[in-house]
Image 1 (cartoon, rainbow, N blue to C red):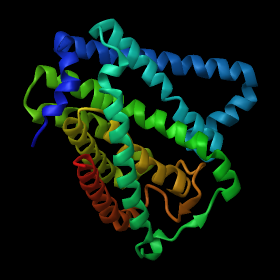
Image 2 (spheres, helix red, strand yellow):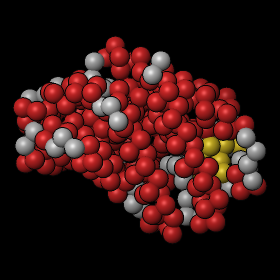
Image 3 (cartoon, one colour):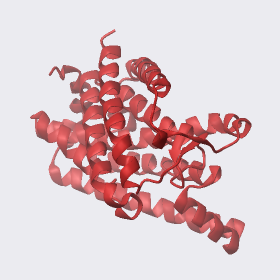
Amino acid sequence: MRYDAHERLVAPARASSQPLLLLGGVVLMGLIFLALNLGYSILHSALIGRDAWETLAMELATGNTPRAVLINLFLFAFLIVALAAALHALHNRGLLSVIGPLPPALRQFRTTGLAVLTLYVVVSLLPAGDVMDTSANLGFGTWLMLLPLTLLALLIQTGAEELVFRGYLQSQLAARFPHPTVWLLGPSLLFALLHYDPAIHGQNTWLVVTWAALFGLATADLTARAGTLGPAIALHMINNLSAIAIAAPEGNFDGLALYTYPFSLDDTAALSAWAPVDFMTLFCSWLAARVALRR
């Protein structure tokens, strides 16, 4: 494995690579993020009234309307603000230092995104079993009108997660612990555990956690190879575009989806049938991104 380019992200972290600073940064970031979300809830409730807020809060919990999904995604902007504050306060770093140089980051985002999007289009054309038959959900005109907002919201949500896990945590750990096992596995396992939700996934919980861990490893590897977050954000965004805006499991964050699958995320039989395709798509996406980065 050649991770020489990773130095572009690791070098700015070396001056403040003490584990206690990283722990403090994570705690501070979490507190700021929670405070901003609480402030948003209080302000929004005051503006629209208690009854309207209670209705919206129920939508936000299920993600069954376009506005609920968009709000959930845009709220990740608070995570970016929280990260920027923690970087400045404890590491004397700017937000760009966890992204990498912008010209190559943008170029790698574009080439990786195109490669992964092409793969997803090809996969969508392959024959699938009855369990994967989709039903129309959001009207095409409405979906198309909302698409620019959807793309922006997805960029913010996936960008925020990559900034935290593959940008901040990975670079700070790599500055302290040179062996890739630490900084590849650590953030990926934490990312995976944050997907642990038996209330939503039921018996499929550990299947989802395993997929998230492998996804984290794929994006961590791409980040280290590229030296920027461009490829990781592109892969994450195309994946979430497919899962949130193209076809989503029925009743699970499907408010922006053009189509829905005839099962929910706690349907063990359906998820077991879907899992091999999902895992293989992830593996092929990682390979496609690596090939794109070599051009």
